[in-house]
Image: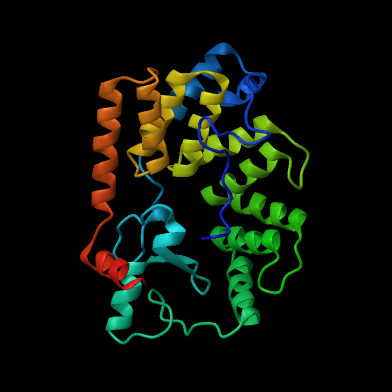
Amino acid sequence: MSERMEPVDSPGNEPAGAPAQNDGAAVAGADDRSAGEVARYLDRLLNEGHERWEGDRCPICFLFVGLPMGKYAQMNQCCMKMVCNGCILAARQRGLRGCPFCRTPPPTDNASRLAMIQKRVSKGDAEAMKHLGDKYFFGKLGLTKDIPRAIELWTEAAELGSVEAHYNLGFMYYRGEGVEEDKPRGIRHWQEAAMKGHVLCRHGLGIFEFNKGDHELAVQHWMISAKMGCEKSLNAIKKMFVEGHATKAQYAEALRGYGDAVEEMKSHQREEAKRLGV
């Protein structure tokens, strides 16, 4: 979706406020923990989250949605399901109306869209809370922009398991937007989501390590996200290889893994939707 927030920029093109070398205390939650605890956490961070989280799958065809997801799928406020463009096209071709997943008639205006989301929120739907937080953050659907309310909703959603909420909270605490800046806390949100398979959080952790000068750890993070279909991570590894910070074998492995991930996300319906501009 266009309302996407990026945690940090690409290597060599970091924005103001990007991670600096003295931010190292945030890595692996290294606050008041012992060296052994930090090492165990880092081991867990690097060994978990090698598969994308299940919320990245289309609930109809069960294939992972291409990245960026907002380009290849659409969110339905009625059921909070992200349906891929291929399945949207297939539903239209079969003459089905309403939501491709739950068949609910489409909302006619912002008020009805907001009512759908709020209904899901009242039932404790973590993704609905995250989605409503987005609307408050951007001032959409007739809502007045309210960043504190957005953070409140994202926090509750994260506690209920929303990795996208962790992603947003990481951004807010890292940059100090709407909250007091707390880079270690922001990084911990990204780490939590990365260990559950959130691709952009994993990529962002690679950039964090790159900016600190830990090229080896940066490549390890990017290897994971590249194999989940993140082109930005693949390009980062390529740049590291050219500059002598990654091996030819690492780049070849990332390239194969990226290619496999992209291939697994393809389907005839999705290719047809792409051709027709759905």
